[in-house]
Image 1 (tube, rainbow, N blue to C red):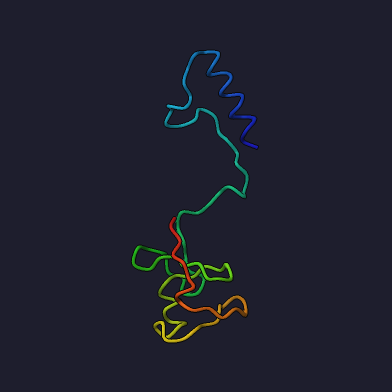
Image 2 (image 1 turned 90 degrees about the vertical axis):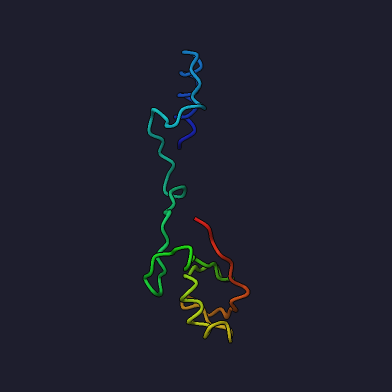
Amino acid sequence: EGLPTLLKLANLMAAKKHEWQVMKQLPVPVDLGKEFQFHSIFVCPVSRDQGSEENPPMLLPCGHVLCKQSIMKLSKSCTRPFKCPYCPLDASVKQCRQLCF
């Protein structure tokens, strides 16, 4: 959806001998569609806490995401595997990966 707009802008800027690549902001709105719109803030669906450096979002092997503190509580401080609260998958803390936003 956004490519035709960007192509039109690039052609217009080239005709006027302007460099659009060095602009800090595009002069036209570009609709990227919902599949390319992401939130930069994570809120854990279990604890309702906002993600932070101390409590980052963690990706479970099943694909669901929880905050680190929720995973620690579910796993009894890393002492045992835990079940994902959204699907029947068992996981361990070692299988979880930190996500960066």
